[in-house]
Amino acid sequence: MSESFISLFEFKQQSAIDYFSAIDDWIMGGVSNSSIVASESGTLTFSGIVSLENNSGFALIRASLNSSDT
Image 1 (cartoon, rainbow, N blue to C red):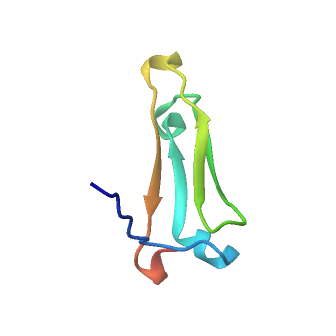
Image 2 (cartoon, helix red, strand yellow):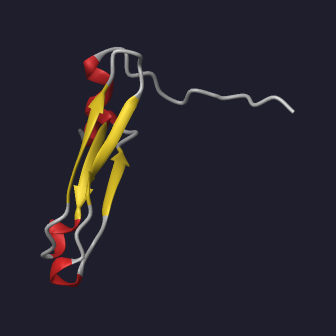
């Protein structure tokens, strides 16, 4: 069985990253830290450190599909 992939977004231009944002637990008093970076190959890399300090611990990426939300 062969694998097939469908690209939902291409990040070959820096402006494409503007629709995405990283959100960490600091909004609830946590200390996790994450980021997103567009690569030259047209992919988006989400990375960071999730901390369980302060009874929290999450990091996520949000896509704003409405251009008025950026």
